[in-house]
Image (cartoon, rainbow, N blue to C red; front, top):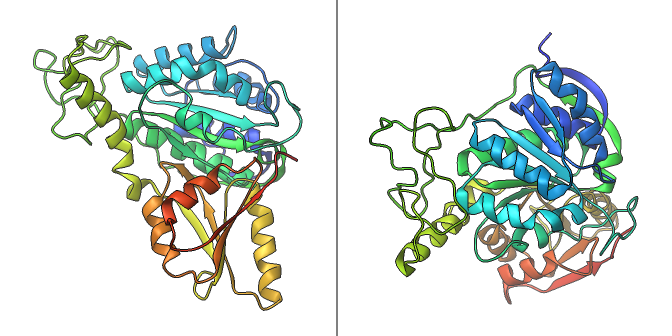
Length: 365
């Protein structure tokens, strides 16, 4: 039996499915600190990783855990951590460090009610800006939002693949409902796994951050493979040497942003239903989308031409996709979410004055 991919039909919690997605994607190190509602991910990986020769580390805290993950990734390992919003607060320094060093890693945020300690066992979608803009200055990340245990598996695999392709911190932005619900999860016999692109140049000729354009992602050797691989949180040249030059700063920051933002069409993942004749569209994400879809179905029974659009990729935000559909919607867009109204701002920014946008906020459940 392949202990990496437990193919078949399972009844999993979302958190358990996430852990299995990580294993299937090739994760061989997890470092984390227990926190509700993400603890079940740590619990499962604490024994599952030993099935595949991996390592489990319980960090001293969340910052320590992400530091371990970054170090493991630099050593060529696929590594992940999991936490909730409080832990993401503590990780922000390391998220920025992973961004500037272009270190691939996966961070799972199972959101809960806040701010502060909040209500650990209740759900909220309050971290959507924190994962995107929480660290200092300018950079880009990728964030995928599952709405079911099945997607906790599927999108965790996808998050590992995207982190390796784009060399960025990649988030699974789940929430307590999705993390703790139990549903059928189907794991295929084979899972598409992307491996890190290695240098083609010899160790003598290798330049760590040399690229041809401002959207390129440089190859990444692992420590110990014979290549010079400087890793520094300082602004650096293509050789990895620290620099205070404005030109170097500008080129580096623009590329850190552009390598993701200019690939938004490739990264956009959505689910749609009933869009052909829609006059009103409900735009939702995460567990909220489950209720939104039911509301759309009930509305159509009443003769209301409602459409359903679920955002699976939250960051980079699919601006151009929203603009295209806004041209075809005569009556408006409704954005339900479990916060005081965050993603509705992104929708409003994307569609401008093309169509009216209505916010349906609810700060937790």
